[in-house]
Image (cartoon, rainbow, N blue to C red; front, side):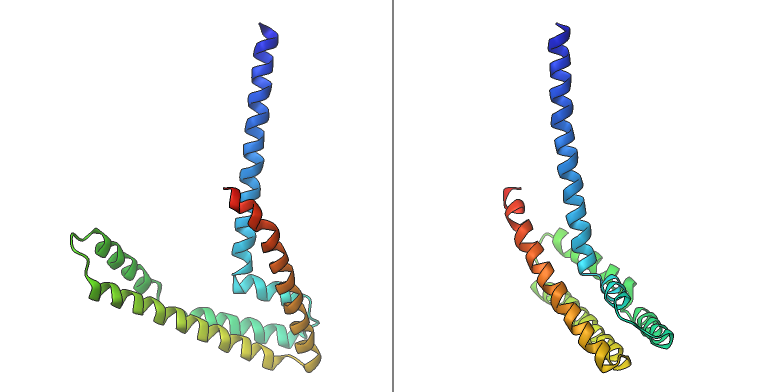
Amino acid sequence: MKAKTLLITLSTLIALSGVAVADEMKHERKFKAHEQHNPAYMHKKIFSRLDLTSEQRTAIKELMVAQRQNRPERAAESRDRQAWQALMDAPQFDMTSARELLEKKQARQLERQLQAMQLQHQIRQLLTDEQRQQLDSQRGKARFERTKEERRVKPQNADS
């Protein structure tokens, strides 16, 4: 009887540890995906590999701080989310309101992308020709690694 109880306990622990490990791996993939799309993280990682002068580092930090301060107001985004929820909860679907919400969202996204492009341009102007070449080379390598990682991860995601 004790052997049977021990066997059941061990098999349960093994099964649960497998679930815990799988959950941890899922969390790591999610965190890495978030890092890849976070411009501040990407800039920090890429620029740490370049040989920047202290003036260049200071100027880049100032540009990034200014970029953060010029972001669209978060309160407006919150109001739009509330309007979106109200639209979904309404008994009748209002096509005009839905279109307006989507247009606002697209306009904000376009503005963010334009600001990101402007920031990248301003940063590139601070770099020397050699640093620009290094940056382009690193971005190419990073893109290759990301693509390679996505190909490796996709078959695992297909099972879940």
